[in-house]
Length: 122
Image 1: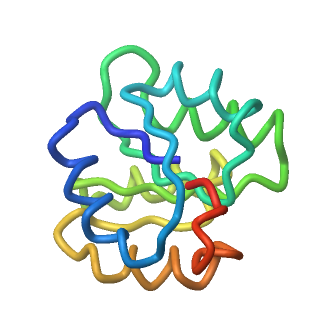
Image 2 (image 1 turned 30 degrees about the vertical axis):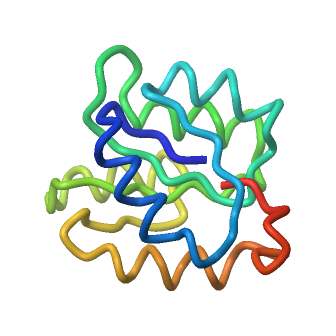
């Protein structure tokens, strides 16, 4: 699952991850992500922090509370120790900066089973 309020950035991430052949569920805010998680049951959630409505930290907490095994990774432009702490306390599995998407590519390849077959939702 890819959660970001900027469609252009979601497109960039999908292009970066196209060779994983993963299936994507896209959400443009935290509320949409919380609603969609139960249906999609993605292997990985890539969650922005700063979004209108429900932000990524609160959305992460709600997803992790309802689904303790969920793997939510923050993907943000903010390299802020307080946000890192808040993300960790909300249950995020990791924290990545948008300026180094190669780490995200490595992460998705390592965590999504069946990416060769295109059956793994992100």
